[in-house]
Length: 231
Ligand SMILES: [Zn+2]
Ligand SMILES: [Zn+2]
Image (cartoon, rainbow, N blue to C red):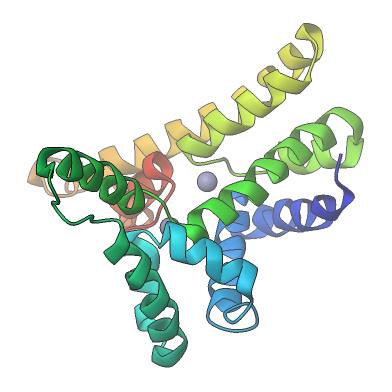
């Protein structure tokens, strides 16, 4: 187990007891802003990094974040060399234009589906998930933190369960799932109740149902199901 991940994982789980957010979303947000800072800063001119960004490019959401980061020159330099590689991905028709066309479609489709930031985040995030499962198995204090969580978003619930399943023997995994279930089921039911009260607030027949704490029900539901707050 890589020790470097235990500190950020523990810190995120500690923090989310207070914030009541999904601790894995918290970790993902931290990874994302670190990667964006690096790519537009310290590692922008590193040849190894540039080689990868030239080949992979970025996804739509990370272009958007970088574009709004107000660092147009670093972004322009990254784009300049990436675009030159993209240009080479489209071969001249030559004597077999159908073959060239097929090759262009394949290469352009590949480059459109890869993102340097996403791939770096995923590399670190999957190790953080393993670390969380490892900590759950070995650290009483971490299990206590898990018990105190408000809950996890649906995509991260799935990944936490899978990470635990990959690592734990059947009996231990059963204990893990039982503990996670009691936290997560309550969380989903709580948001579901909030959402119903929000819907009822539009109906005069329920005029006396309290809705004050249900105002953010749609936002909370989207964050729960998709793992992302609507922006
Ligand atoms: Zn999450
Ligand atoms: Zn991305």
